[in-house]
Length: 108
Image (cartoon, rainbow, N blue to C red):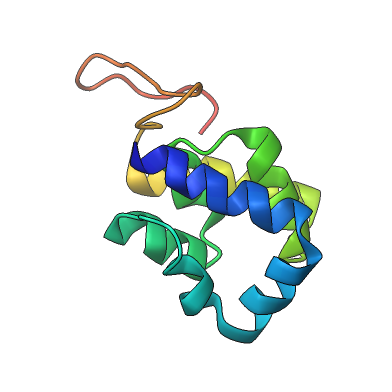
């Protein structure tokens, strides 16, 4: 259920100018409104696109969050690739990667 909370936070941030202002003023207070794991909280507060992707955030939601955080398109794509290199396969959600042990992820 936690991926839902993370996605909900990002979805709201993508659509609510008031919440965006609150986030820019006190991101931790905004994050406290949602039931996030430590990894999720760290990722969202650190604008860690790669970890957010690996945690399973949908790309449609994630790309708008990246734009809100002024991360360019090519950087966004590279950060997702770097996230898989750093944190391993996508763990949850629609992009979850199920790999046999030792399998390399193509293109990363």
